[in-house]
Image 1 (cartoon, rainbow, N blue to C red):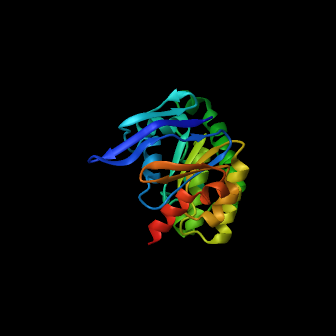
Image 2 (cartoon, rainbow, N blue to C red):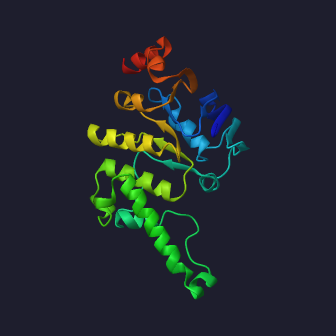
Image 3 (cartoon, helix red, strand yellow):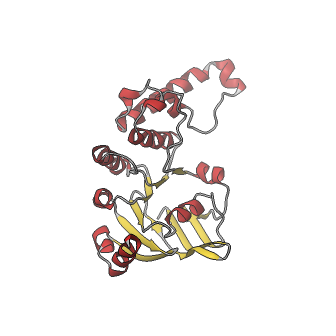
Length: 248
């Protein structure tokens, strides 16, 4: 188990956004969180990644408690977060966006004098191109990020996360606004990455995502109301009820 939460709760002005939420993400697996708007999904991943402070409960990553650490501390442990709106630097090229992603930029005095920085730069370039090739973005390496489609920008965010050494990738609606063909490509990329990276994904497009995920949690009113394999969860009467109620 790479990540788990224990009775995680978050309140805003006394209103429960999360209440005693327990989830677990297995290493090398894709875990999906579903639920109608306002069910607590985004609050959950914001608390896990340090953007919100938990009021109760714990977050455990690789056996270590990380509850309420700062986002930059959590990211250095290997938990990388992507957002509904990609945050690429639009005026830089695809390759430049990937190259600036790693931590610890800059060379030491020794590296500058000895010339080791050259080897370091070559290694970074090689890694960046391998990641872009893996995600089928290598043909766009010299294009500015502002020229990419929404789906390509989300793949670029994934490339940046891989460049930073992500162990767990937390993604908020990675398929939002992406055409179905590219959405399938993105999901297939995630499946290929499972040997290196685990995933915790929030997504509404169940028609596309369910066949690619390993485990599903359904939330409503800040609580987990069902969990299990995808088809079992979406057929659970409690899940059906909250989705139908959200549409009425």
